Image 1 (tube, helix red, strand yellow):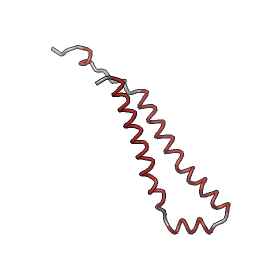
Image 2: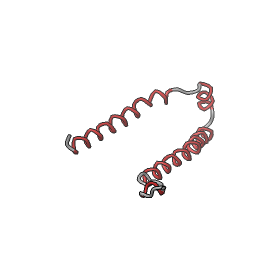
Image 3: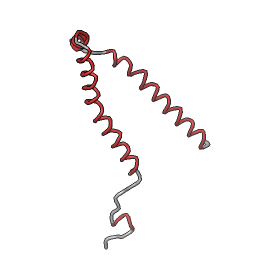
Image 4: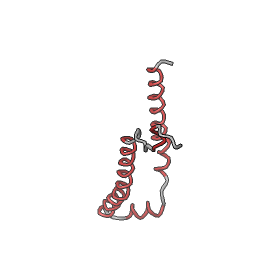
Length: 92
């Protein structure tokens, strides 16, 4: 198989996976605690802003940590730990 065909299949697969993740996650956003919804709806504008800020504060650190870990893993993907056996030395 030609290299450019493999690359096109890879990009098509990544595109389909991304679209599936976006559209299949939409029903998850519709699920929510009815008590939370009624409390947020009955509260004032300040409380709604505080709730939004709290959600961002709780979501942002794990997201940044995950992105950072993926970046580190990507950068170090070809590093391996070499031992004496890997260098061709043999024990007699």
